[in-house]
Amino acid sequence: MGVNHVQAHLYSVELEEGGGDAKHETRNPKHETHNEMGKVPFPAVGLVMSGGHSSLYFAESFHELRRIGQTQDDAVGEAFDKVAAILKLGYPGGPLIDELAKRGDAEAVKFPLSHLEKDSLNFSFSGLKTAVLYHVNGKKGRERDASALSEQQKADVAASFQKTAALMLVEKLRRAAARYPAKSLVIGGGVSANSRIRAAVEELGRELGMPVFIPAMRYCTDNAAMIAGMGYQMLMAGRGADLDLEAVATV
Image 1 (cartoon, rainbow, N blue to C red):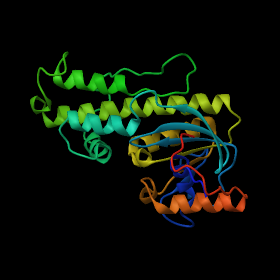
Image 2: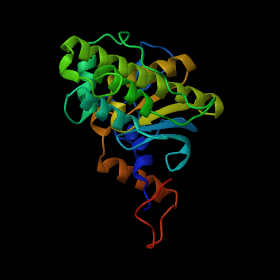
Image 3: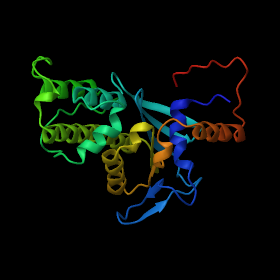
């Protein structure tokens, strides 16, 4: 079975039944229910966010996906790792920034939003990463380093960066939902574990009156279950592959 690893991250929302923290958020902000397997309304707009990918899809089903947007430079997860390195937090950057940001002021630093050309569904995070570098290390990027910041200042930078990244991601989701006849929003990948991004996508779903599907935390990162589940869906749809299938795909 020719399972695309990146696309399979979206199937992760199907890996909890009657439990876990995968959830389907409805128009009512106080109503949250556990995601039920097979209940994602299609077509859907899907967003995969990881260290190597920021990919936006229009999905007719879990195995019929068309990529409609992608990163033009750094993926969002890569940007989290690089900002964590700038702040001297360690690796992997995503959970470290998420935790630090909880103690920071997301309005403290006004980082630039990169939307690319008008109506673009592609992503660019290199400008945001560079803005953080110059803010922390000086205009040339090497005049000082994060050791010159207080712990509160580091937390403020983390929170402000995280907020800006979430706004950029949500804006592309909003554009895609307006352009394509989607009935739901689905996210996946390691960065879908980020608390600010999860909350922002849920808020977008409420704004649009559209259900949002988010993986359980333990299925946000790479896992064999998402590959097996997607493979099963393809098998049931008769979408097997020949033995000369290439191991690397760009779809």
